[in-house]
Image (cartoon, rainbow, N blue to C red; front, top):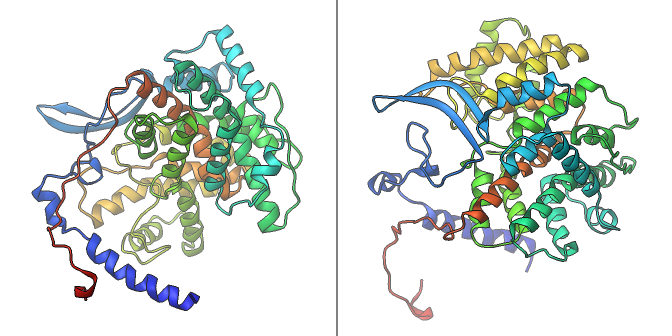
Length: 452
């Protein structure tokens, strides 16, 4: 069959698929179906219980939801206190947070040392893995490459299907240690094959934190400043976990409840995170700001910035999606605590890089965007900058390739996924299977000769 004929068939089938798949919007209201498992106020439908993290975005007064400054807790400890704790003691925090999320408490010095030593031991890939898996048919999309790498690790695990807690802890720690390598090496393969760059594979260094090793493996001269490494470490900490209701973590619970293996569960969550509505937003923020810089002549002129933001909302600028990327969140309204924490450190990095004016532009957009949105659209809750608003800017200042932005999210979030997988196994009851109401009309089977 010719390509032309195939395309004709696809176009014809497309119309049929759209027509038969379309459901009348009023039916969702009729049957009280909350699309996206969220009500009109933005509150999520209660689908489970978790002791891993908590998001606070409102208080309840006389049954009314009152928005408040956002708070995020890891195992009951405010993320602001966690960050303040390890930064004041001049320590990298990601490994400590991994321990906290998985085991429910902060490690003492002995536990912390043993945990880091084991992660360092696991920070290696099987023999010939780079050649046979990463270098073989490298993907243009690094999230797919990461999924391929993680799923292939199943073949190297002699106890891959064992879902005992002890074994899942072992697998989780290996994935926390190995995913940075798969992500960076996959980028190297992509860069070599598709951008014709030199192929350089650097080994991680024992004793380095995850953030330090990522920069070491990516930089041509292996060099980075302590501020760069500390801010990347902070990014990993802030992205490590965010409640059980986000799409990829919910995927972890759903897939784990079926009894599948750790690698399959992780790849399912990776597939969720790959979606631009979930993990790819920071790339869109960076691209949007490039368009802002090209179309706003005076970065200090608030009227000019506001005019551009109105054009974004009216689908007259950038990708014409009607969105101001990095502004607004499904849960937070007044503030995203991750963005609040990040902002002060971002400013320090901008000063080190000589990008104070660009940081000021980000700050102006952050301040003006909620005002513009409120004037243009009806809102059921407030909007504020989310963590993606600044993370892409940070990654760009760190000279990290855009192709790695979402994989770095995954490198961090594997900590939260691992904790939630363990929680789902420990509390295993039934497979997660929500109800869907059928709105189809019954029909009779027709013989082939009678079909039009």
